[in-house]
Length: 163
Ligand SMILES: [Fe+2]
Ligand SMILES: [Fe+2]
Image (tube, rainbow, N blue to C red; front, side, top):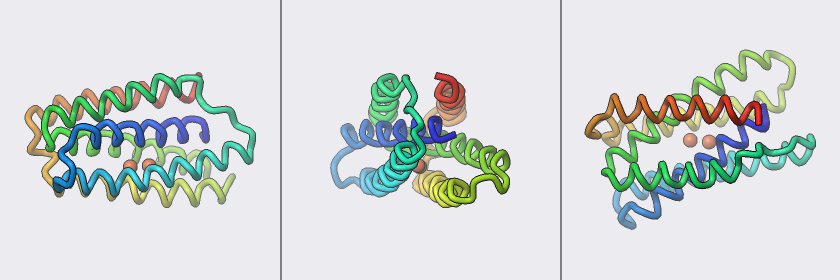
């Protein structure tokens, strides 16, 4: 669980880094993204610490998520500000489902980890809602774009659990 969660939060920081590299500095979307990126940084730091504490190795796919995350962020931001927000909408929708499943799987087994996942899940949902409120659904091709990104997230999650 820690391996896939750390991979996901790492990917999130890379997506937002890609978006911030492209978005005009100080445009409203860049400000939203910067705030969300800071939260992803905190999520990542927490999973990094838990992994070190519990001697879990990171996913071997980290170099791939580095490049793929940045590319996804940059590509969506190049399409439009709304597409960048639609990317957040899609990613956070899958992460919410993923964390929800983990919490069900954990049950009462690991209250320390469950508390972190619960707190992060709430923030991811807030990211999704922030993106929607800022116009994610106005992105051209929103259903296709978010459908493709969500499918990509599911593949990334499945791979990071195994490799
Ligand atoms: Fe996160
Ligand atoms: Fe997030």
